[in-house]
Image 1 (cartoon, rainbow, N blue to C red):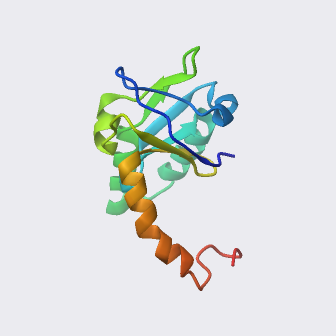
Image 2 (cartoon, rainbow, N blue to C red):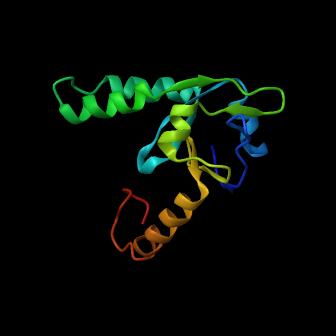
Length: 143
């Protein structure tokens, strides 16, 4: 399970060093793709395969499902961390997420998310009030 928030830097070649706490799970290989809210989703290869299988179960007749599948799968890139635990973020994904030098990498349970740090700060500030004001069951059985 991926947890926590980290602040690595993107190097001049478009690589990021994976947080130490994520390395064991991610070292066999990852798949990264477009995420929602203009971040990147990073999955273990096994978790991405399960995710893609669920996407494939959506009806082709549903326009929203087709669009979601296209956005997710067409942006996907299989990557392998190097010996220094760096992974290259493809240029199209860096552009999609607006990644510059300062990144925020968060653990989101079954996936990792990579955000431009400024975008993450804005998102976090926007979400804090609704998070604090949650008074009904958003996730079944949680509250």
